[in-house]
Length: 406
Ligand SMILES: Cc1ncc(COP(=O)(O)O)c(C=O)c1O
Image (cartoon, rainbow, N blue to C red; front, top):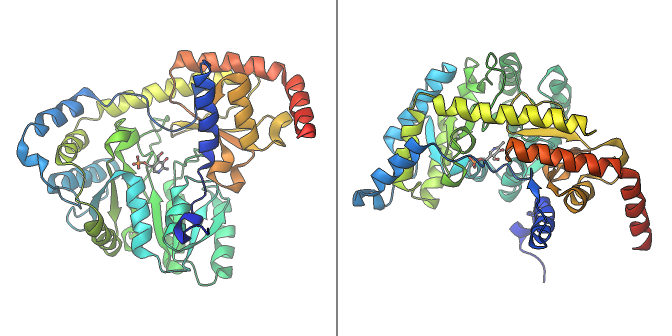
């Protein structure tokens, strides 16, 4: 029987294949060090949890909540933008709360896409950037770009040669998976380009607070004067406050786009559970000390990973932001592709990573390492890697002869 139209556009997550292997290795007793999924392991700060527990006692909070977010929450998000980026937002018309930024992004795609609309999307990238639009009937034009001057040649070509003319450009800096960070000057050029070519700009700023150079926090695209004419930006509480399971994020920016998303959401959901919204408000209005601590933990893990993996013979460029390192597969293994290499790491080194191909075809020479295990476990992973790499010739010989017999 033929697969449903929508389901055909949603192939099995590549990551699932590594996950299955990981699960069976664990079932067989292996101690797998999981650097695969970007699922924060740190607890949500106590004050936020306490607020949830307090508010949930009030039965009035058990009713349907507000789809676009309770007013106090939207005001807190506007205050965060004012404080952190110097960007003034109207909490009534330029801010909407979402059930995690992933939901917000996907429903924005539903809200604005007509069948066949062309979307300019980074590759490699976080999967919802492409699949949100594919589900909505859009067409993706992939761009393997970095946030510097080299971005604009491919962008010009994409705009010139796409039929119909592209509707929107997706940007995601700090980037998952590449960890590239954009400057405000880069954003100025993006906005000027978008205005010239009447492109919508959708900026995913999920890692706004996970950065390691204290003097260089990632900017918001909305800091560019006039950006609000064409841009919407998505932020997330998942990483900033270690709240991934709470499902709380935001879209802010252009009123017409925010209204479109708000309308779609009003048909789909009643908003997050009110105690979650109140606790999230409390988090956003906090003094930022929790965020600084989260940053320090990831920074220390990054430093341990870069150092110990490097010494083990696996070069890991230090990411300037995000909770990921994006590392090229060692030369000897590169021809295997990232999925086979990732499977080999589970089987031979007890390490799970995310294969680069899961972020798009242009990521296949890489794997993504998430900083979600503690320093001790990262050191253990490095020891496993060293053992694995020192027997690389033998391993490759076995892989080659295994393939020959298949
Ligand atoms: C770039 C990026 N955007 C969005 C998300 C989704 O975050 P949320 O938990 O807010 O849906 C993630 C999560 O890993 C991400 O890496």
